Length: 203
Image 1 (spheres, rainbow, N blue to C red):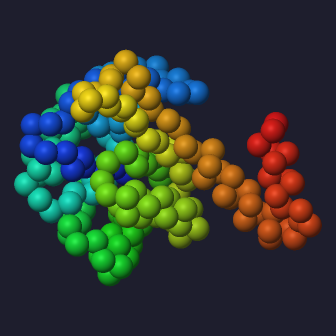
Image 2: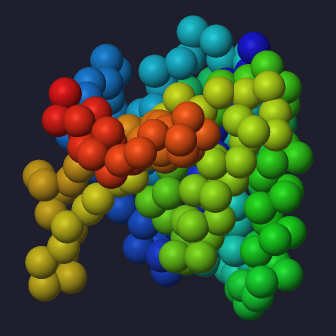
């Protein structure tokens, strides 16, 4: 069974990418570590199956992202993840609807059957993050695959300076599960979907 990790490469300027510790918020990581890429500590949790790890990296086509991608590959090498386990998906800077559809379908096409998927929406443009989220919502409907994690790394800044002591890694997977529940409730023709959803949230 493949474990597939989807992320976008940072758009930060050349040399501006910082490394620090993202503290998990509301969940635990057994082997958390300092990184420039919030998906890295998620990957670390699954290194016991390193031969089955695949990484999908969305890369906007510019020089800054090219450099940051090399930094990403370097962090993966430190974990023992080889470059051939990484599939870069180039994305044009002009993110038209056509480019968005193409990127969405490319992500889905790269998901192998009988796989488990994790996604990080920290980096990239807002449309790129949305495309990853939509891909996540489609994967289980189109493939024999299961989404087990959706993450976002937050690094607050004050006066332009990173506040690593307040950096958080959020697990947003619950919201994906809630969307699945709403779909099931509608299929069952539950009369008050909103009330049923609130009960689940309050549990």
